[in-house]
Length: 230
Image: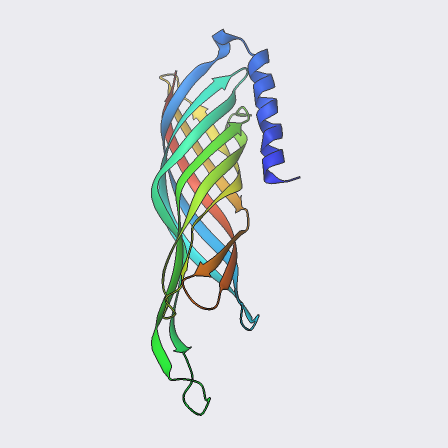
């Protein structure tokens, strides 16, 4: 089942639960979160001229703030929307590069034009629609699932003069944790999260040979949320 189909299913379940709940049992909540996140990106670079393929794994960490608004209904089910301001770096690859251009009069390869090749990517415009189970037991154990949309922004400095475009991709996010709403309405949540991004493929422009980069990012996080539930 694809990510889109999976969360279409979750959305249908959510709509059904909303229909079955009564207005007196519903309440709006809002708040903010802070999440420590570890990104791991498995990627590969394929040269068009030689079909040479180079694979690598890049790691990065980030502290990500977010804001949310949610609707709690029934015995404690939640549908919510979360937005992340700013951006976070997925990874960076900085190497010395030798770009051989042209040929001399004897047909031998041209001179090596040295330089620094810096390829990195960031995520921004991160939005998530999520659902949560009620909190079970004295500790309020709960599970969550979400559908995340994100923009991948590439920034690079290449000796060839080439550049890569940007892409919008989807991701599935899942979490397990503990939550509790105090008598004064203060809502606390702590969860371990996992986000699985769809594969992104980007092709270079601006040079005589096209290079294709594919990447499969994943993210693990620990998330603390504080808000108010009406």
